[in-house]
Image 1 (cartoon, rainbow, N blue to C red):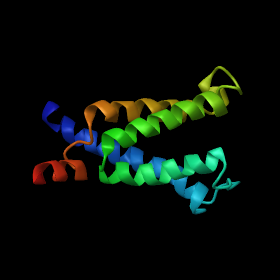
Image 2: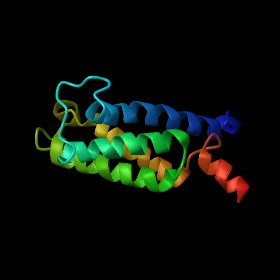
Image 3: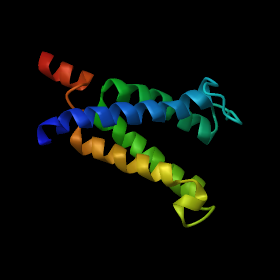
Image 4: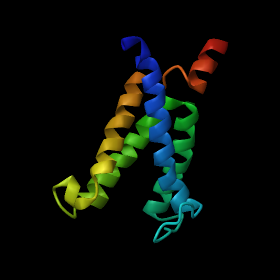
Length: 126
């Protein structure tokens, strides 16, 4: 099974990025339709830019480590400023996915994008 680990890393990156960028596309593009669309200049609107652009970059595996670092920071900020004030328990404050995203993104900072990525293609071309 260990020989498939690099491909599992790429699959984890692809699925995580696809689900994550939906948050940004919902906030910025109205798809999927969310109950409320934040102003672009608001903190949730800026978060939407991070989620959409970062999600796309992560999906294609371009600049994976720095993008993942920024997204982990965004999710840490969201966890502490938006969710934690509601309750100390993530399952009650709605912040469980923010915490999970934060740590998955931190994993990408250290593990990289995996073999199915533009980072890998560019590294081979250099």
